[in-house]
Image (cartoon, rainbow, N blue to C red; front, top):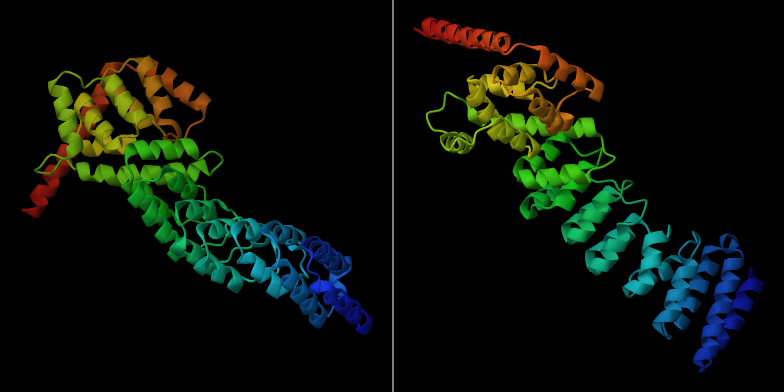
Length: 372
């Protein structure tokens, strides 16, 4: 050990060299010596190496410090003080260390995230070992790019509080990217994702669906169904005041524009409240029944209702495609449903619909009589 210290001291004594070229060469020699067997050095020797490398590197230009950072970034036994110094340097020097060095602790990362630039924070989001504490500081201090990159990092641990903050940001900004990134997180609580999707416009939701390839589609479809179902509850036909979707549909009906093609358009755009109101008008059923058949994931009730409204078979097939993942049937099963639809008599479907209406009317009368 003493021999190694003496050898290192001899090299350090040369640090007084005034030539920049010689000092750069000296730094490489010291770094080479350290990297020969870094794990064999004592903590004192490691500190000594770091102190000398720092004193030389920080007396030279940025490119020298960048070279040093790149050489030490993957070394688990690198001098901690020097690594922390490099991580707080300008971003070109800091990035390789921040992204790759295992020497940096969670507390070190929190300190960097609390006081450095957005580029430094962005570099942290690329690490594989981000804990909840680091995530919270990144969410609190980071811009949208930082936060989205954090959420996209599948290995990052994100707390409930951080998820709530990110969801608020996604809603406030109507952000497609951030909302889509949240939807990809398997550990995101369903209620938070539902809140995000509920507050966004239909157009934004459609973009999110388009951008969430490779996610748990069944989970996403279930949440979307819950969202449109919740929104549809606002369409209670017992309301004294018409809702906005009802006004839209009534205006279309007055203009003669409420058609099967319009229903398909609503379905494509995931405008379920308008779809439900339009279906109720065209099939001459109450909104509660229209809501129930629209939310039926088998598609059977929807088929019966559309047939009662005399929707052509080809348009019904198009409607099934527009509903996409909201119908829990395989393509062969959907094809079979379309065949059944084509063979079902319109009068039979209408008779069943009338039965539904009579049954609901009888039930309502029973409730009123009981209340009296």
